[in-house]
Image 1 (cartoon, rainbow, N blue to C red):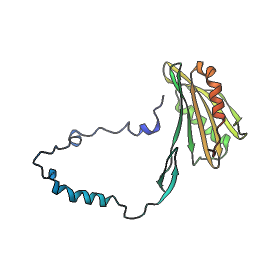
Image 2 (image 1 turned 90 degrees about the horizontal axis):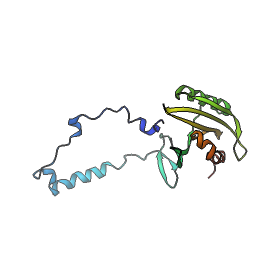
Image 3 (image 1 turned 180 degrees about the vertical axis):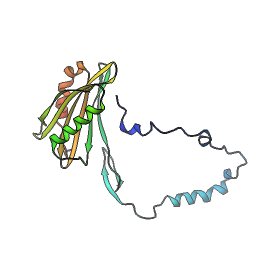
Image 4 (image 1 turned 90 degrees about the vertical axis):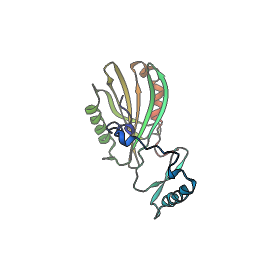
Amino acid sequence: MDIPEYYKQFQNQSPKKDEEAKMPEKTETSPADKPLQKTEPQRQSQQSQQPAVKDKTIPFQGNGFSLEQLEDWKDKTIYTLEGPVTDGIKHNVIVTIDAEPSTEDLTEYSLMQIQTLESELKSYMLLKQGETKLTNGSNAYEVIFSWYPTDDLRIYQHQIYAIDNKKAYKLTATFTKKTRQTIGPAVLRMMLSFNPGKK
């Protein structure tokens, strides 16, 4: 399976040169070890951490915490609801939020997502697509497809798309052929209970 987006940034980083990785060791006679000479640099370091001007921030509310987010930063949270390991794979439902979708038309947005899947996934096969309803009665779009993350593993994925208040939401669940029949119906009911903007 694809590695999470967060880790992809580390893939192409070149290792540090040996001379950069090695830090000089202090000796017992180093002046930096003397207590009188450490006091003033520490004070200067603490003073330099104080911001010169007030940062422009917006309140960010997470799951059980809050912080003052820098105004020009973007929330790219991906929510993962982890399920059991069954038939050799760990099941989960992943919720991603697109705060700036290229279109607010649900069908058009969904077809664009499907087109991306077709171009990126190995041996992608579309099994089902079309409009559906969330449990709360609002419109959604679903797609079911299969693909091969490895040569000997075929997985099935069920996605639900929804657009609300100018944001697009995508829910993705992964199954094997067997678990589509066993835990699949319960997972689908969980996905359809999605209620954007509600706590």
